[in-house]
Length: 426
Image (cartoon, rainbow, N blue to C red; front, top):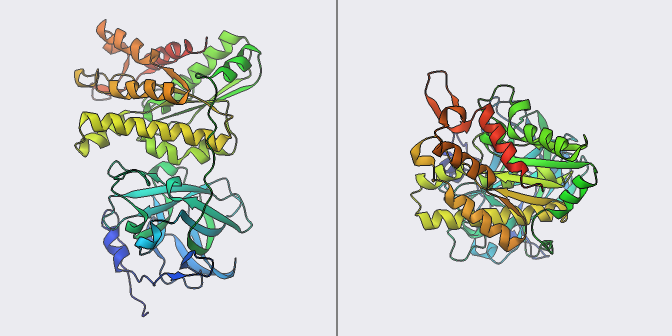
């Protein structure tokens, strides 16, 4: 096939660029997998974004012959390389995708993304860069997380996405894959696989987080990871490393149980939605599973849902589906070691936000009962009571222009959150 030049556009017009790139016909291999890329030719691969742009070259020592080598520079911009593919109906009964992969030994991760031709449906799964030896990565379709509200989960009944609609394969890093340190990796022998075993999901006999509580009472080392968005991160909070609720919760737990062996890690990221938090689970808990994860998402999810004009019923159903996925994936990644505490989303500062996220808490409670994990509405209740008492000024950040931030608690609000959540540890 003659080579063609593909212009490099910034999203959201990347899909047009992808479709303009050459797409070789997939061929059926003897083992009934479908070969997508043999790594011998870097021509179909393009760098789509990044400053500086990622480098693509032909490695000489791939898994079987040559390989595709990708180099990312340290950057504050999202970075991607990828190639067009042509999903077909033959993909739909298959289990997923495989490729041989060689990292650079660093602690980073790269996202593998599947994208449709309109760019409105985007799916991601993380792969570690730590292993410098060639290894085969196998990802089931349902390992890929839909990063945007417009995309249904793979395998969802009557869903709007299926493998045959995939038109691009990317490797890269979106905004939430920070930090963007320099890295390099190689890819070879990309295939669609007929059979990839699904992992079993451990389910505890009882709800809550009894193992973590037992370790706290026995004064054993306990690690808790706080997952969430900018509220968890502590946006606009002075000295957030000390004054965001994960750090305050750590201090309160140490005081309550009388020892220093409690660690609460703040993994909040501004702008994060629940689905994007699920994508990051291999990075946040996969390599060193904690005893407990706390989960507080909501407002970024709601913004995306409202942008897509979803009904209240659809919003609730989507929140429940996302939380169920998060719980099951935490359990698979940790081998059942990590317990889970879902936290109902706190209300916002303006009247419209006082009850805007109630459905997220309702879904959290129902999901926790269904899948036997912990749930707390205590921070939400504490904020609701404080707002009714007219304590708005003491809860939310005041911005430089004098207006009140409607979403982010200030230092006192963060302390109220931590003190309320502490009641779950009885």
